[in-house]
Length: 438
Image (cartoon, rainbow, N blue to C red):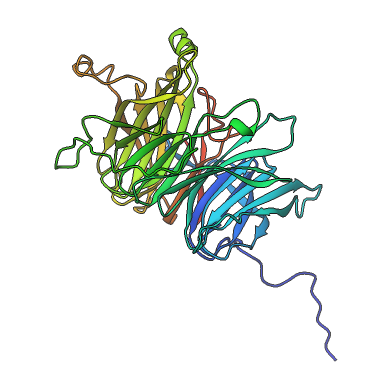
């Protein structure tokens, strides 16, 4: 008789796996990061940082950040590829995909090292189209009613049939439609809230929405009360495809719409930062400044300064494009991920990171992004918006699908008012994941 015993397995895991397909959407809440892939699974990871790994020397602005991801939860409810995920303060997670799938997940903390999160599906979106085969390409959420009241959210969705629809969601009442609008027919790829939310409750909430589409245009919708189609913007542009000479504001049933051309083809990635200043002029006019950066199928990176103005006593808010610029051939392939890492020099400059299908991670500095470009300023290089390449590094993540800034503030929601934007870490997701520091 022979007896053999062992206290542990002879094999050990060198590195645990993640998704079975490419990661297409990433969202970070500070401590936890949600990744969604074409395998229809959402995984929630806890990132444990270690010592940073220097790439290209100590003076390189972009460095790989050493650390490990620990998967703490896995969600398998989607039946199609997932398009977008969003966190809200480590308490709610939202996800969208094909077949008009949209889920609301309630997240609870558990005092356990093995499984620190408990996740339950709180709601399933039911207000689908007649066929129900559209994709919810992107969405944005905004909490309503203050932190002391029951959780209520304004949720605006961008669909593949060029429709925009906005809802108020609560656990007790479910989804209540606020309004719909339609673009030109081009597939909407990106969507962000600009404002327009009332402090008196959700009944007067009419979000102002920024969208990006496959035709290379950015559009701003002021309110979604009606369901009106917008004719394609007739822009005065050169045959070479350069930036148009002017933007076309349109009025539809009293609601303003601003459409501007930025890319030659589809806009695959977008990030936006609302910058608050103490300017007396901006305070008196109620204006706000937004820095918008985009990455396109044309391998280019776009920068746009958007400004909103609502004078005292005015019933509506108007939006104008102060300046815009584009970097042609910024990558050797489509730019699939872009993010604003931080502001510098009192908010005058911005540090932007991007990635694409060429497996490169690039760092850019946008100088004087708030300057209004006109002929009198064209002769001075100190006042014109410039985009400078700061770093260009190789990434081991193939087929990158998204890039996410890992901000320390869990409640920032992707907006920041100055130079403090966490510790400069960002995540690149595709066939695998990498964390970089800039």
